[in-house]
Length: 160
Image 1 (tube, helix red, strand yellow):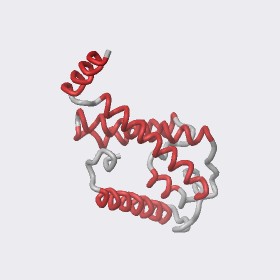
Image 2 (cartoon, helix red, strand yellow; image 1 turned 60 degrees about the vertical axis):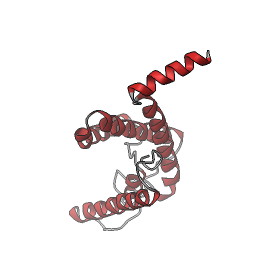
Image 3 (cartoon, rainbow, N blue to C red; image 1 turned 30 degrees about the horizontal axis):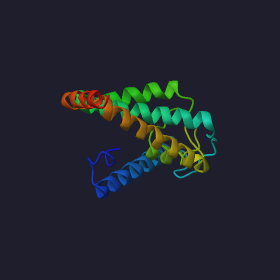
Image 4 (cartoon, rainbow, N blue to C red; image 1 turned 120 degrees about the vertical axis):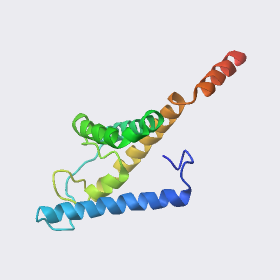
């Protein structure tokens, strides 16, 4: 979303995505090692269908909205806001709130209760992207600067 906002260059955005995916994979491998599980395994847990995709769209929407509002009002609070949001979304979404394609990819590599079959990833990633873009659009409008809001209202009044 930061690339779409032009806060990141395309190169930096690709590096950021690569770092998130690599970190998720490394975290999965380490978790498997801690629990004496095979280090590399594909998930067999089926997660697909409209309800699951809607839940992922909602999860991603809320995550992006939380991050953008946190940055706007209290940047230093963003880490704990994200942690609290993901914890809550785990319980209020039917998908258990992956909310991030890097997390979905990492969770496709564990055959634990938290996994997702690799075949189900495209639907989850598409839903997460849609939810994130919707949040970016809404929060860009809601969190615009005061002067922008006033000029938008005046422009609307002049057109009417």
